[in-house]
Length: 201
Image (cartoon, rainbow, N blue to C red; front, top):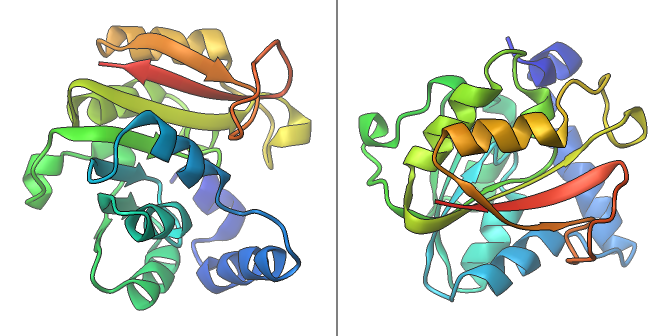
């Protein structure tokens, strides 16, 4: 069981979707992740949304002309994604055991995005394996983009993964740090409790 399931019991898909719908109706921009990804790879690129939840990021990228696959372990989240965008491919799988080829999905993605604190909410000890699996889903030159909190203010759980540790996991998986931002709006990272990291295979 990962930390997300410990928090939610795997039954919060509808509530999660409703919260973002309310934010959007209130005028807040809820598509920063997709917007940043769209600046990193050209329209038509293949994107893997790792820990896709209700599909918010991938659905917006599809609307912008990207081809994509979403994967998540939380069935309640995927139920919302499948209902909202039935034409997209949604896979129920644990990222700690994810093998694109075994699911019938062709690897060689241009970009893998892990938004929404995916890495800090993994089961402790699986972070390196997930980084390796996601790196393996990329084509040469492809990008892994992950944004997550680093302190209690930016996480729903006590922090357990540092940037240095994350970078080490990525390096072990054959990835090189290409850029790092403080937000999904690409503000420069100068320290602080949240970071968006871009690693290249």
